[in-house]
Image 1 (cartoon, one colour):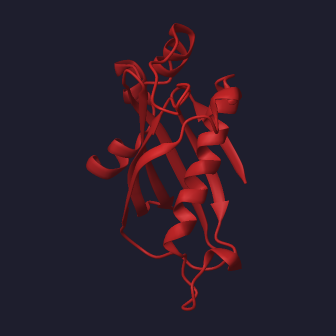
Image 2: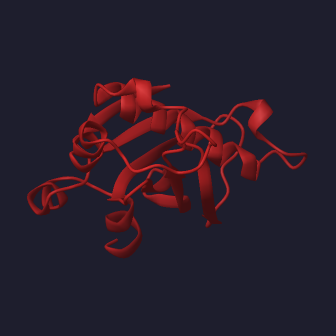
Length: 153
């Protein structure tokens, strides 16, 4: 798997392996969240905040499946930070096989560091780091986000 970071987003190349397929030979729906997690880990590594990965449980995940890919196919997963809330983080993703959108969706995570495991507000340092990953207007024109892929073909 290879990837490159572009400010607030990261693109990770993945290959559909045999374990990723169902009985018919195309990718299984559970494969997409693993690809998203790989991209998420890469995003935090490249931002210099790898310590944050794994400490934010997902409270919402949605995916739309648009097309199939098969064993041996390569795809690119594009993951973008969309919004930083008081204690949450929203990211969107698109899985692309060439110019074809294979799957798309979003996930929401929370900062669950409260003593009882409840959501807690971000520290100023973490909030600054997360907000630094959100695309600026000038970055949107030069980069690609899942929204660009889905709504601006």
